[in-house]
Image 1 (tube, rainbow, N blue to C red):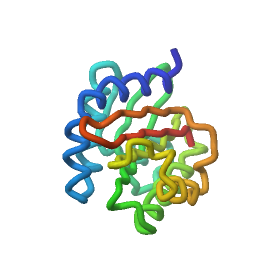
Image 2 (image 1 turned 90 degrees about the vertical axis):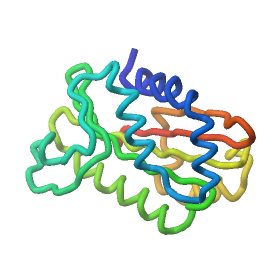
Image 3 (image 1 turned 135 degrees about the vertical axis):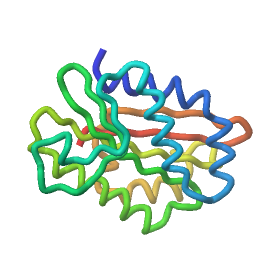
Image 4 (image 1 turned 180 degrees about the vertical axis):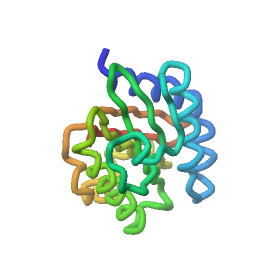
Length: 173
């Protein structure tokens, strides 16, 4: 099983059980990305080795100059992975958040030359729409991301209890 398939399975299993929380949080209109990061960390600790929250790039790569920190770091199969998470919902899908998503990606791209480090970008989308792909507002916003059309390594869709959807998409950068 590939690391991406395993990561997708962990995300699917863990966050299916968090659908009510996702629904509750999106209704507030506030960001809950930090909560997601800690839940991801918790979900990964069962199966991953050398797991770290908020890893400094310089501590896990040979890029000593970087002051950037990621969201989650883990090792599997002789490789290291740094995950950057961006969480966007109905109330945050504006230019500010699009810029944040691109900034995360730019930071991950600095890891391209790092030995045995695979950067992963996770985009967590949460909406009151039952099918974000059928929403022109969501699709227009997503298509404005320079990499949206790239092949996705992780895709998880979670139905929210009352109405809505969480869609977690990931790429090896």
